[in-house]
Length: 303
Ligand SMILES: *[C@@H]1O[C@H](CO)[C@@H](O)[C@H](O)[C@H]1NC(C)=O
Ligand SMILES: *[C@@H]1O[C@H](CO)[C@@H](O)[C@H](O)[C@H]1NC(C)=O
Image (cartoon, helix red, strand yellow):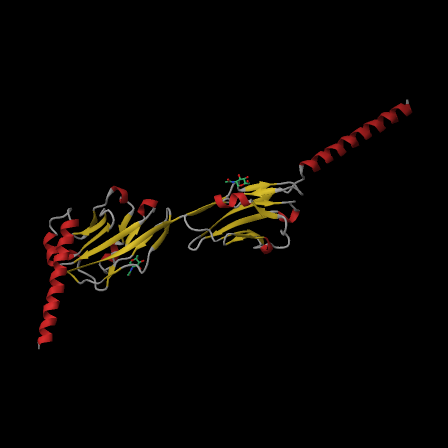
């Protein structure tokens, strides 16, 4: 009998203090709508709101879905959902009086609910064109007439941009050529591999080391990085003594623990090198000279 009483008392303390906490949080954050003040003071934490299972990694410029949902749908007329940044308390998006509203300029046209999902208890936020400034924690607060609850989502913005130089490069047979590949990454670069379009490994870099033995025999000893450039993210490849069979696409494939990206360079026009052209020119000139000399001689002999 006594323990039952104790349970009742502690239950009262828990609910009571949380109710006060909710009111306190409300006074801190809620400035935009007065009409919902009454709604909030009456709602008590206890609503089970589901969020993401871990941090959300987004590539710069991509879109991200921030999950927020309740199991049992809530009638729209008694529903209020608020997405805010937890750090700055900036209002990202609000669902109130049956409609989506209230976006700060920095989120205008970039943050949306899935309108048709709201009635199913799904208040996930879709944020597009993610910028570095979007990194941070977001809170989804759900209020009904009687209950409230929230969940948070952490966005971290990651970046992996792999760029080449010219789309195509040309070289003479026997010459050396540089195939460009520059990496801009927010994460540690785990692997860079240059491959041909037939998936043959030209040269590989892995966990901070160049692995010359990984090269296919066709490229062994003929392909190298510029060691002094690697720490700048410059994984350009020098291919030596270009051969006819080298013609084709070369792909620079970059992997971090989270992302992969690549760039492709076409090695084309494996023409004659300058030296070859010079020699050829000399031959033609010599041939022309010989021809004119011999015709001159013929004329002389006839005459
Ligand atoms: C909410 O809606 C989005 C968009 O349709 C969907 O991707 C997501 O899985 C939904 N979440 C839940 C919990 O149903
Ligand atoms: C990468 O290094 C090579 C060799 O030094 C150089 O020619 C090239 O311009 C560099 N690329 C970039 C983007 O800095």
